[in-house]
Length: 205
Image (cartoon, rainbow, N blue to C red):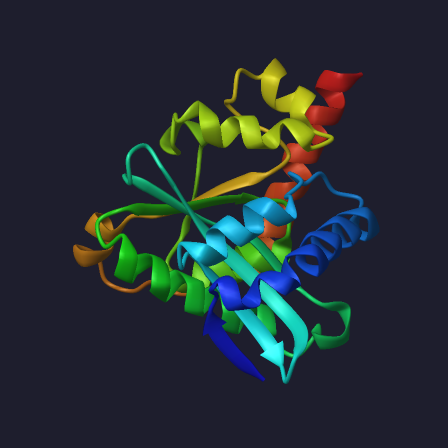
């Protein structure tokens, strides 16, 4: 298994990456913003993506997006092919794309929104903290990307203040001035997710 900073040489994998992301969303029953092969290729061309290959077989992928004129960066589209799940590959890809993000955008705040407990746990180990949506980018281009998510109506009803996703943020400025803390365990995120789901179910009813 090898991880690479993706380039145009990997463009033939764009369609399978999009299909794998879409299929994973259906299986989990969660909302997710759709990606197109053209968009994935643009990330490869700019050197803002990491791809994992087992020989010539696609194994995993993640890419970088920048918002607010480079003040914010997001690691998005993290996906592992079904045959390679449960082997710790998602964590390896996330660490690699996080390192690439810090190298390319050293002063940017790195953030993400996700419903996945596994991703939340990996993020916390990298130094991300759970935050309110108000602490994330105000760049509307980012939030427009949520339009294809089935939970988009929740986001619009709350005026982008909250959704079923959890916002997480890594702030390099704060990281320099604080000492490492204990890792946040998955049960904490499970409780947070259950609380948010109960709140939204009440609002829906």
